[in-house]
Length: 143
Image (cartoon, rainbow, N blue to C red):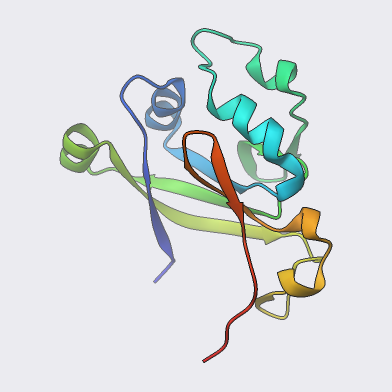
């Protein structure tokens, strides 16, 4: 069974309309080096600023067989097909995606494992908390 993930997309966002219209989306995993770019893109609305990606300096690239906007410089990308669940989408803004393809930067991912502890710290994955605060992935813990 293919892997799945969930995302919350507010009714007011342009991204939601794009996902609902296309039935596809891509999860981009930004790096610590993309802190300012990620914040700039995440705090501006495409509806209000149609050129927000260009203004923030986002470089997009294509992947053969996928009509999706991939952001250069990320540590990973997950191309997803929307699994329509109207009740969840309308009630909870919750969307389910089936991962149909995935790629990762080999400087931080190889042999089926992340290797952030040995990579340049600027390549660590970036995680948004709230209020403009982010964390970069930390040390490796093994059980």
